[in-house]
Image (cartoon, rainbow, N blue to C red; front, top):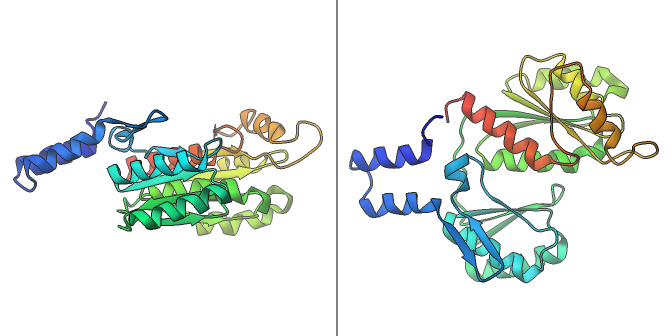
Length: 258
């Protein structure tokens, strides 16, 4: 296993005299777990260890608890990504963010938000393509886009290019041909990821989406179809846009040496 890049960089900068011992300690200290009252244990060092930021799932959390957790995370690491956010939670979070001097950027279609100090993301050079079969698949695709962007990748999107009108797919693939990884979201019978995987020489991650009705609806038929693909394809869980986007960014960042 390769040494952790961020930890190695911190130690090299200290060795070269570019940062002080105290600054080095602060960076390494990011490996710690931070408790928030008696409701949460934040894995502040996940990004340092794994290259993937810890994301706070808003679903099922009380608004006040969510705000406490998100603000504690942002204070420790400078940024906090929140997923599956509803409007009531967003309202409380925005009020608390303004009082605390943080910027809250909401991505409504993805149901995500980023609480930050306002500093820009450092680009890695990784490029991800996010493609959907239909417009109903866009919210899940946007979740993938947001997390990949948070991980420093440029994201090329092509939406509503499904197999029912397959001629729409070819311009989309040309548009995104610089991508190192393709994320393809599809509901109903979930055909599109297998088609894309048969056309490109890059990793393809299929995301079954809970659109569609009738026999094996709610993403089950799409999941089964992707798992049975004769094209080489990696498949995540139903509606798991975050998982697909994070894995795609992780691969792309490895490719470009980040």
